[in-house]
Length: 354
Ligand code: TXA
Ligand code: MG
Image 1: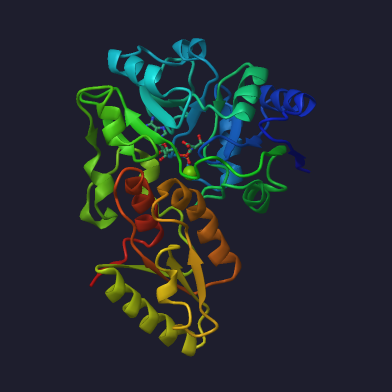
Image 2: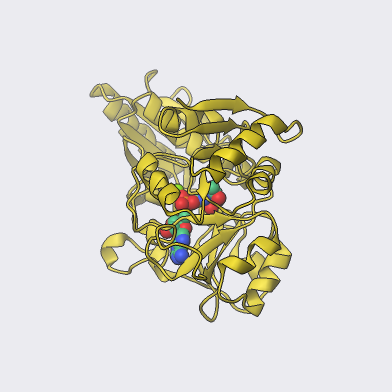
């Protein structure tokens, strides 16, 4: 049975954190909130515990895990060296939504790193995550707490939907702050390379270190043959059950096309949804059949809100058993880059230019 406890950052239930820390030390699995998405945690130095994570998620074992630490003292034993650029980035962005790739030390088992000689490390700033890592006294390996292939969980209920009965404990801390996974930067190469875009953007990184590149493979379709350096980026993550297509172009033209195709599919009897924004939903209201579900990701002037609603929207489409989703594209500016990265993968690279 899975023990489910609720708490929030302002009111941490220390008894439950004690229990959770004990479970982690004994090799069990605990899901917990972070500021990005929920994580599925286990002792990062325990091989058997790492194996349990892969089993609970149904995740391929070549896809490495991120080790979460509570302070800088916990970093040293896990890595071979801490490059100068890493120190600068840590000072600027830790604790926070940034993961760094280091050369691993011998104590980190390859079961945690998917067989690699490097290890991904993040210091989250969520009070519950911080409290749990400190209480456990060990670094906590934690992938996103979803079943493999589903969108990352941004609400406790998403974790319960996916993990109830599969793990020892779930800490439901309500809605996460950001709703997209951390920015991953490989600091073992020169210049450092972004392997996954997130809230910490390239522009923000460049204010701290002179040079940073982006792994080209994450900008192309998997069929183009480039292999992403973060093994997880090659999978079609976040895939809703529906056939999901995005339309790019002048907004009114996009809206008219979406209205046409959505009504067509609805008339054929398919459960059909539209993904839009607060600014654009008026295009569809009154123009599409009653059966078509219109979902707004929020205010285009608040990209953080769009990011925060994205994974929930994809899960909600699954719950209503949507068969077709027609979506607008979003700006790639700042965090928009991470938003479009996740949306593009969810759509299986199916973007139609009008
Ligand atoms: O925000 C986050 O990063 C969340 C929260 C829970 O911290 N975690 C998360 O973990 O998104 P996960 O396992 O869903 O994604 C980890 C990504 C995968 O794409 C994986 O391939 C990559 O990090 N990764 C892990 N270790 C790596 C390594 N040594 N080298 C390259 N990529 C690595
Ligand atoms: Mg994940």
